[in-house]
Length: 109
Image 1: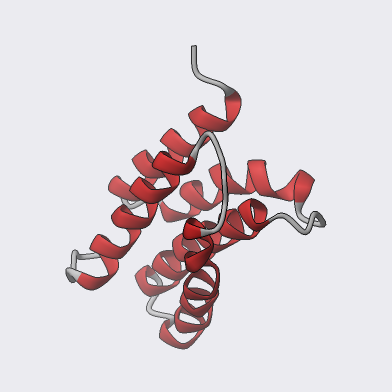
Image 2: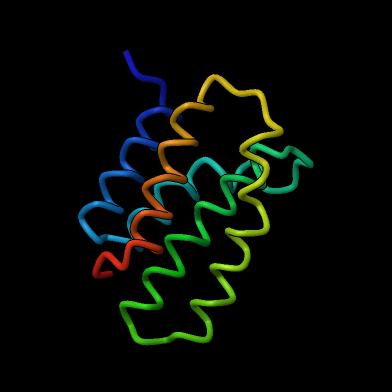
C-alpha cells in the first residue's frame, strides 16, 4: 500500500510525463504547503520540484523570463538530493532525472 506521500510523488511524475505541469505543481504542493515553514532540506527540495513544474508551465505559456526565475529556484535546491535522508530518496532522484531530461534533452514542453 502506498503512503499519501508516495502517491503524490507518483502523481507528480505522471503529470510531468503528460505535460500537465500545473497539476504536477499541485501534487507536490499538497506535501510542501503544510510544512513550508520547516527548516527541512527535504521540504526545500519539494519546493524545488514545485518550481520546476512552474517553470515548464510558464514555458508552455511563452513566459520565458518568469520561467527562468522558477527554474533557478529548482537549481538552487537540487543539490539537497545529496544531503537528505528520506524513505523517498530514490523517488526524488527519479523525479530530478525526469525534470532534467525534459529540460536539457529539449523534449517539447
